[in-house]
Length: 152
Length: 279
Figure 1 (cartoon, one colour):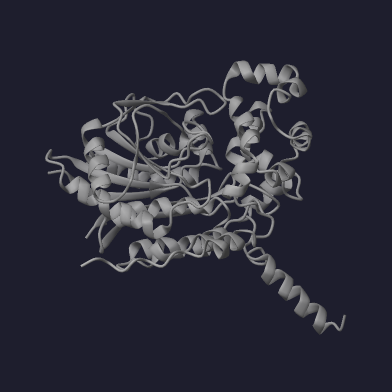
Figure 2: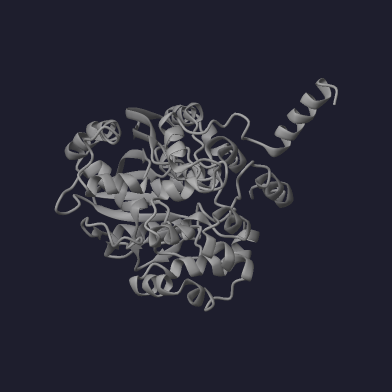
């Protein structure tokens, strides 16, 4: 007896759901592809020699990589949210955190609307609640219902 | 024959390794975390496992984006701690168990799991932090390790069901290894945490504890939790918990809970820890 084939997962529905998380860029294949050289650049900072060369002239070091002007500007500014949009992933980008001597938590806090002390305080108090942070669509629907109720 | 005697689930937050390496495990911040592992360190001393199959994920240390294996098994003789940007952790080298690892690799492939085989790699905090949490700071790790690396970074990561089934297959492979060995399996990573974007810092005590309850129960409902639920409820990095399902799948239908601990926070992360044995 052969087993019945499992129905194929609906990849389009699966990928669409991954874009429905507020304030989050899931590291999908599309982002992995787009950000490949950003992430490989970050990985190059694993060696002391490269870290020194990068620190000596960041712009010149970045110019050795086939990455867009937009990504280079974001890297120079340490604008991590833009880098996530461009396909950067935090585990790779963390090599830049450590090159800068920043703790993981401090670097992460720069992606939120809080200062590092505020972020640390939030974590000590139990972290960010999932309430209101689960779904962009649900938040929009709730905001729409609220607007209707208030007669806008 | 080799015996799979217990399973351990544990977070592997890098800051815990820093706390061990800098002697801060008793301070106000880390004390309550490490106290939760006291029981387990004593238990491991008594259990004396010969080998730990250590399920973890590499964090851009051994693998970069050039090659992304979904499931990879370390069949080497030994592994060095990786340099993660601050120099390697000063912990002992990790000794592999190449005979058992190759046996598991071959068995899994014959059992329809198309494993990637690793002969040489460095191992990062995902693997060495759990060793520090369970064994403290010995001169030499007291057991051999079979690293089992899972992609939980690039989507799609393996489903919970696939992870659970891999655990079942690992258990069959261990049971057919002819040497008498006391083998444990550890699932590491998690629990809730998000390290990126404006939603960073998300933690979910209630969901994490529900997950621990599910691991303790006789049914296998946890294998069916979809990726989107981990993402919504536990943050983008909470998905690491699928690795705990490999451990749980390996233990069979019924388990007995020996120890359980939960603490918020450690840096960006909720710390969870559970010790189970097949019942």
